[in-house]
Amino acid sequence: MADSNKTATLTFGDTTIDLPMMSPSVGPDVIDISKLYGKAGVFTHDPGFTSTSSCVSTITYIDGEQGELLHRGYPIDQLAEKSHYLEVCYLLLYGELPTATELEDFEYRVTRHTMVHEQMMNFFRGFRRDAHPMAVMVGVVGAMSAFYHDSTDISDPWQREVASIRLIAKMPTIAAMAYKYTIGQPFEYPRNDLDYASNFLRMCFAVPAEDYQVDPILSRAMDRIFTLHADHEQNASTSTVRLASSSGANPFASIAAGIACLWGPAHGGANQACLEMLREIGTVDRIPEFIARAKDKNDPFRLMGFGHRVYKNFDPRAKVMKKSADEVLDLLGIDNNPTLQVAKELEKQALNDPYFAEKKLFPNVDFYSGIILEAMGFPTSMFTPIFALSRTIGWVSQWKEMISDPGLKIGRPRQLYTGETRRDYVDVENR
Image (tube, rainbow, N blue to C red; front, side):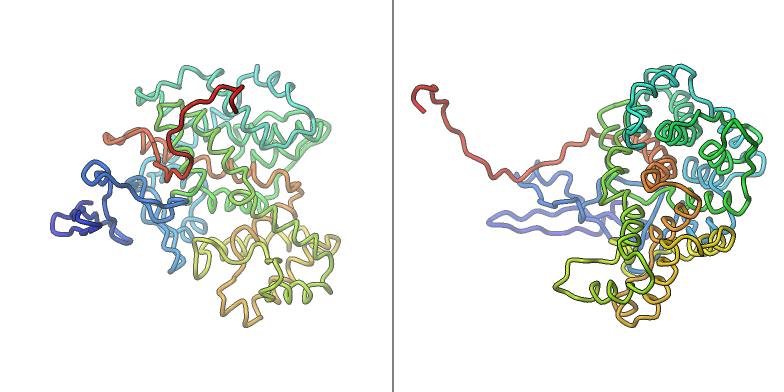
């Protein structure tokens, strides 16, 4: 936090101002410019807020240079290997790993909230059958405030807790319903005897005409996808949730705003873009051609699913996701799926190519998650809804942290105005 012994001095023109500095528990120091405009009459310009801290948080830390992702201090690879999604949800939400009793109680509460209000079935029928599942999710999650208005008072800690559990519990049901609706199959109700990931897979792929058994390998892979996407610090969608909720908006509206932001191809659509690239490559024999194009500075083509904007070394989530991808492909096979054949061979050739090693363009979490979801039978249109389902716990945790902050202020970014200066209105006949 603020360090009384450290300040930064800003000088411009005849003005000199000392700005306090803040020190985090880990990471670079921060210059506090919150009073800059009031003291000096100027503000900073930072498109994309890439050099601006917008909040104080204790939830997630990323070191892009070292390839490190910590949730409440715990490395993501340890959590993905040794823990499971609902335990990670508890950690993100409450700050500590649960005891056995606490975890059992939390899992019980989440499991008993997985059903959605029966009237929401009618709400789905208002969408076209060919609507994108993300369009359905934005609408349905936003509408939860009309169905669960007993948990929209953000000033009530108990209502905040109920809303949090409801969002974590019902998001898989809503995502599965969105999928079933678009393919014309009847909705499958959740089952309380199944774990979180198995329940979701069953709601997506079961049909009333026959029994459906979830393979434990697929369930574990799905759980890892949820875990590895649970939170990622102050990304675009998380910042959107914080900005929306800073106005006092109810939690369901705020999370719906996050889903809408995640829908953007530059954010949540990376694994879908990766699969589309693999389909464009088409066959294994064309891989050298596309690798050559990726190396050509004059060719706009880029290998999707390689490298990461934040991680300048390697994506710490990718190693665990690769293990899951190998397990799923061994189980389901890739002989009859040319896209997965291309994916495996592309991974092999890229990892053995010095160019990609020098540039640190390693396969990232999106590359492997897309492969897994494709092998499971999900269409690419469901990739981003599954991402939204996974990230809900991160959004909810960040929302709860923000609402509890006594220094909460409504978000109000400034602008660098370059439009016309003041001018007088001219009557239409004189223009």
